[in-house]
Length: 389
Image (cartoon, rainbow, N blue to C red; front, top):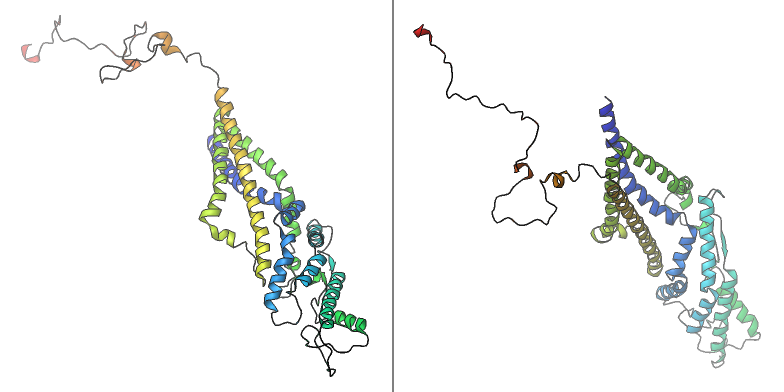
């Protein structure tokens, strides 16, 4: 009964150890990225999102508003927009959103709370556009008849304004208004995208803080369980030496599987990477988001490869220590000492016949277990048949 319990326990512990190394290390590689807000922030910076975001948005805006009277494609207007929404402002705003989400995940707040106010930037842009419009208007000839309405961006003549500064400020306020260049200059957590049921992302995934908490504890829990299963594999074997041999083989096999996994996902299963892409209305914005997700995916694969290499080295060390610490048996050189095997270099035989050490006759003081055959020759007595009696 004890024998079968040991065999079953050894099978279960070794199987669980293999599964836990693969899936546990995979989750560990993910948790290293997800639970590190600094890594997320650095990824946005290293991928050039802040440097290219305004240019990409401007290109999309120009394509979508080709019939608009606002001179978005004017180089000076675009320069004013780039100065107002510089990379440092975008970085601060994005990191504020990231920090609010991590405060929610860590239980510091009930939901992500942030408030981005771009009204000053909108005012700077509208003032610049109005200034350029009136510079253009002042270079036009004076109108003979004052029109009821005039578009300073497309007008062919200049009306005789009595107060040009007032009209320029009026145009700036109009551009910065609800129907202007930037109707919504504030962005809060309530403005996050909603699904068909009207739920915001943090309402849809209300269990995310609990999952994040377990991911934070994963390295410690995984280490304790792996050590426990490793000890069980060693102790449940017939000998500890065989246990270390099996443990080293399990670690090496699991490490090789981990090293192959990123290659499979990248080359054999490319659809897995495509599933991580986000779809947005703006092609440029989608390209920037996909650039970030691709970088995070590459970092995830890098973590798995690094851990896999370390596990492979650990398995080799376990097997190496087990091999070089084997005790030398006093019978290890018995063949040479008895003359069955020679210490000289082995010479090739001229014949095809192969000899074994057991074929060499050895003089021994021990009796053979085989009985000598009885000889039927020269019997002193013979058996008399019944007919002769």
